[in-house]
Image 1: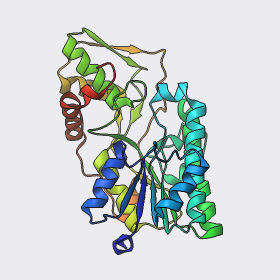
Image 2: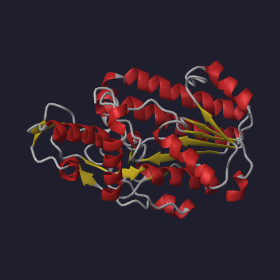
Image 3: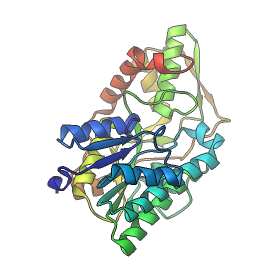
Length: 319
């Protein structure tokens, strides 16, 4: 099926972002060079007229929709309305535009936040609707999950080949280390690098540390998305993950050790932990398009820390 993308005009929304840059690079490595990267300053996809302009001007045959308004627990708590509205409107209008303009394939990126708060471990795609998402990021998760409904409805009524992928928490060089919007790994790396540099005696961390998370290296996520774009044409959602579960407490200890911070950890139990556990069943991705994560977690973490120390810190406000 790889040949089905050869020569196609591929449009990547969010293609200049953390994940998007890797997806574009992965496409180029495979020889797909007819790629258009959508930038917000040129096409604000929240607005219908910008979406129509994009389809009319670019005329894509394949759309990979990565653009999203995202953040950690704090950002979700402060922006629930914005995260719901902007993510929903971008996806809804892009999928409708794909139908109207005869797009051959639409790849919608979902979120692990769409799963119910108490999903059995490991998360299976069939459990996606068996409960309400964790409250701190429910508006974002529900907005993204609504796009799965749209993709399946448009497949059933209009024959639109829309697929839906559910990547777990991503990390890697080039991540967003801005404390206002960063996720857990970049937020912790920034804190511990700063503390080690300043000689601080303690570092404060949100929650109790008992929640667990799974993390997928960004290059592996890009590989999974491109493989699905090449090989998967089904209606069912598919998890993209590494199958590794680690507690936040163990993650904090690991990052502190790798950075060389020897001070104390202060757990702020007044702050939320988020979803109690997260780890995915990744068998469907392996079965349907041969995806399996390749990057060792500690090695990926070391690369991310090194990137932040040598490049990223200078780019973050307040560093």
